[in-house]
Image (cartoon, rainbow, N blue to C red; front, side, top):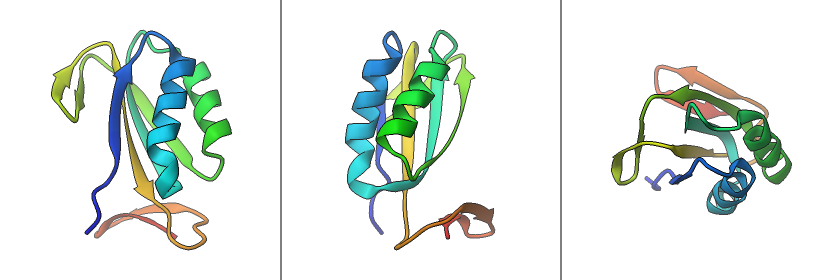
Length: 102
């Protein structure tokens, strides 16, 4: 099974964060991108940047009081996880087997 890509970036500049996240996730063309960000995150700017850079992804996320990223617990970061798309995904669904892109 392929590793699911994930990245943690500083939350201070949402536009730069969106670029970094998109760069890390673009190779898998994610059908679903899950974002957890510090409460100080400019989520509107982050969402706009990610939507532009990853137009086929469904984007979900929330603010946090602390983020768990690839290196463990952190604060004032944005953590993103991308789920790879199938051949031509139309939707992401949660079921018994986890999240699948259909």
